[in-house]
Image (cartoon, rainbow, N blue to C red; front, side):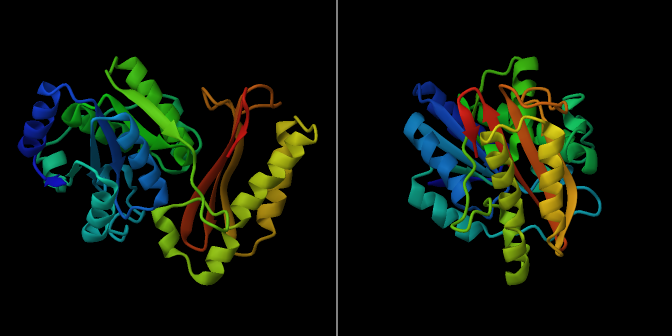
Length: 286
């Protein structure tokens, strides 16, 4: 496994693989990897001739009061995990490589970026789309792998790829949970033992929604209100949002029919966590 930290190092390797006709799979990450990231890596290894993982904590997707400076970082730990999985290349650029002095170009997906997480984190998806497009241009992947835990991100990046005619396929994979049901996240490391227990209220609220739907409830307002009631009973929880929206355009739904996204963001102490449940024509996916 190799590590590239400059554009020229990365492009040299990508060109060699392209000349060999190798299919390139790509997993963009911010590092401090967990089993959710590794599930994406394993899928890429199955489907691709070469797998690239980027590790870059992107300052452009953090707000001024968010956790950019303290976001967990451990390259040696990540390197060992990726080497064990058989990754071909890690792209680990410094900030000045991705955003050199005088950088002024950004990418936005209008409307979709302003809903859900985008409403409480203005500029977040502008930063996400900008860095992902830059990474796509550098890595030139055939397929890029993302987890459904960040459902809004998947929906937005699919739209960006479609609108900009990018020659890459977005491959979303199932959300991965810990043994207690908490959705895996690098930010889970912020939680104290007491907060960790309290954080299970996110999954409990989604389980409640699933049970209501399976027993015939289709009224989105009724489901949402019961979820809010459950979460609000947890003293350490503070709701950012609980929404039931269309799976394509993220518009609020009155009734759940064929497809829907039940998404929530909740502060447990000072840590903001997200989770979701998707309803598709194939059933409930969580």
